Length: 417
Picture 1 (tube, rainbow, N blue to C red):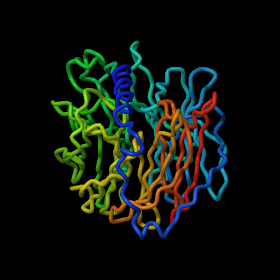
Picture 2 (cartoon, rainbow, N blue to C red):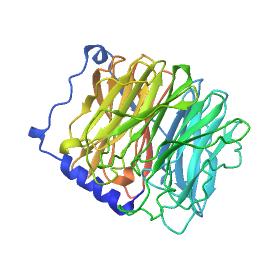
Picture 3 (cartoon, rainbow, N blue to C red):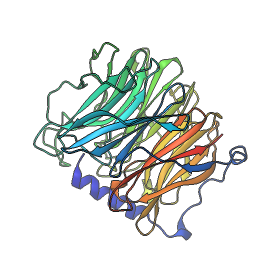
């Protein structure tokens, strides 16, 4: 991540998108079908201590919810998680602990539950003297998180550079992953440095063996989150913020089918020309042949959260729809509800210094529906990215509340049938 440059862009993006209430275009009206199923929000008690942040959410096939977080340790930080079944939390278990963890508001650890019962997690560890030189480490557990495998580094370049913004996904019997890889940024993270950040892919089989790395796109935005989903036929779809020669920062997607990555294609055609990374990546969710994509853009100086639907397992996406044009901050997520609709989440500013976590239903046909406020936090970068997952018939949204002196993790359930 380019610290000063990305921060400057984030601030300038907010300035561009802030407009008076009278000048803000209205969001699309709710669809009748979605409006007939109102959503109820309930905040839940958590096993995470004060000071916990950077939430991770995952759901096991039996509907068990997994909540992970990062918390301060005596020396450095530790990454922990707990499971919720039948309304009760397990005791928190430690995934990893260390003094050199790279802890960042935007490039965060993740957790995934695999169909064979294993749990996998990734986190980031500093490797060099520069603040943004760090590597990816990942481990798996076959006993519900009581013990974890020795950490594996999926990239084998050995270069002190940025490696992060990981998306984990099931890839057959293996664990698949994509990440942003800065090994070619030999001059560091100044805007004029030679080389470019690339999007790379690898997989880890059940025996712990890594596949060869593959480059999906050799020039992408440096510090925006990636998204991944697995559609029918085990077709992996990834989405990310691309970077054109003219500094166009629109969303692209690619699909892994029959062992081959497709040529990346543009999603949404927003036309956002920006000189640096907005630190605001897309997310995907798949159910059968349907893949929902959500992202943030500020093309033309208007901040928007947008959505598009694929009905052919991610080969193509339909017309993009605006979910929010009311000066949103982005920080998006999306998942499928048990009803067959989707649920999308993002953040919106609440002047003067707060932010709202909002959720909106989207019908299976891609029409925007009911919107609800899930919770409140600070609007600064430290509030991070809310996370969403559907476990069984319940949707869960986790976020970091930064309004007090000490950050606190919060979790809400949404009865969105």
